[in-house]
Length: 163
Image 1: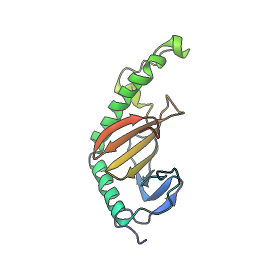
Image 2 (image 1 turned 90 degrees about the vertical axis):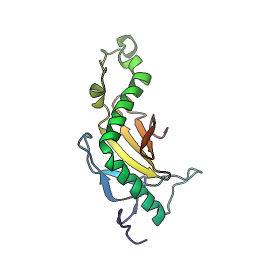
Image 3 (image 1 turned 120 degrees about the vertical axis):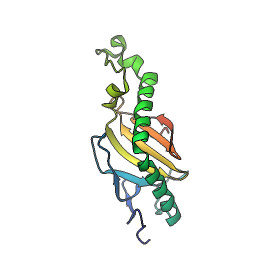
């Protein structure tokens, strides 16, 4: 396949296909994070070994460019939804010394929670205008936290591979 006009050379990588284009934002600890193009596995759970088509790559480029154009709003959505996720699933444990066996963390604002979501693992762009963002969640390193955007809207938050 010839180089794509936006993505350049697309190569098979450790978790699917990617190019030299990476993601960076000062909010996150790591920069130049891998952007995967398409799904890693097919419906039968087999690793996909065919490179995305030219049309898919064009769709992925539009999805990614739209995401970047609204990055500050998208980052704000991630931060606020991550804090809500914490309050719904983790606060009962981490804010209760009797349950956790540790002093309460006193995470009661988005800003205090942000320090736990700064380790970005990767982004994946897939069909239907979808971007999933996987983060090593410092409060749940086993499951992490993942954000699924569809057509520019944050639609789901959950553990990695649960969205």
